Amino acid sequence: MSEFFRFRRFRPWLLAAGLLALLPALPVMAQQEPISPLPLDALVDHLGKTLDTRKVVLGEKLFHDKRLSGDNTITCASCHNLARNGADVPERPVSLGVGGAQGAVNAPTVFNARYNFRQFWDGRAANLAEQVSGPVRNLVEMGSSWPEVMTKLNRDSALAAQFQSIYSDGVQSKNIQDAIAAYEMTLTTPNAPFDKWLRGEKGALTAEELQGYQLFKSYGCIACHQGVNVGGNMYQTFGVMGDYFAARGNPTEADNGRFNVTRDPADMHVFKVPSLRNVALTPPYFHDGSAQTLEQAVDVMFRYQVGLRAKPQEKALIVKFLHTLTGQYRGKSLAR
Image 1 (cartoon, rainbow, N blue to C red):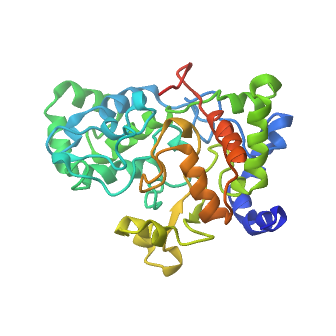
Image 2 (image 1 turned 45 degrees about the vertical axis):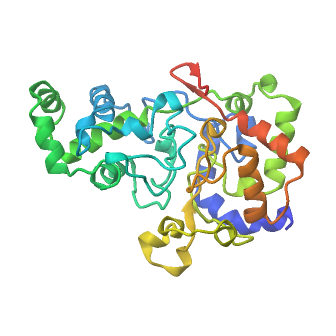
Image 3 (image 1 turned 180 degrees about the horizontal axis):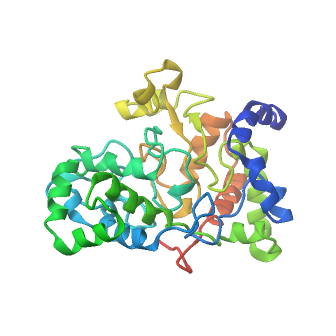
């Protein structure tokens, strides 16, 4: 498949991602690339408005509060541990919920989730606040309900007073969601080496890393993995150039992807394209956690999305580039 054909095929998605609207505000080098650097100020939302730090503080507390789960054992951080780069431990293809129950899909990182155009692999949540409600009410994940959560939180007079100081109606499900979403908005990882290069630091990348980036573009990976989050801004079929699920075997309901939301046959095996930011630190990969290493993930993408077999040398260079997407959280570089 030629590069020209790839671009024509995916051009509507590139336009839908709103890249053109971002270009005037970016440095000259960034304007010439389909990926844009993460903004440096995490306290500013997408409308340029400064986040309410009171909500952020409350949201951080709630993010780590076990009372959101039915048996008081699971927090948001249980599956999205910031010390584990916002995801679960690499040994778990899927996370464990209340009573040790296994989830259906791999837990994506919460870092930079604010830049995803939808939340969850199947895109069923429109934004971060809506996403919060899913795990709370999921019997396998947190196994609770909003009335139960609100009752428990209202018993904490100090926490109830904190809610009341921010929200006139106090502890409500919508306010819990709003506060956690405000906190998650601050979980960004700017200043990756690739971001620095985009901002004009020519020495930020090695020659091999740049070669990897050029290959990433020439093979069409950039068609789905572009924009500020290097993905996360469109849907795509998993298995454009081959039947990944038939080859893998043991199909599950989660493999249906967006079809589970829309019941449209055209959405079978369609998923939100994941962000590649900090991807070197968040194995295993894909919704099913089937790829343990970046090398394996690149092989799968070449075979089922591009229709080619990755050459070992080129694969190694692409992996080197992917490592340059590892950013900083609160001024410190992320590490395994």
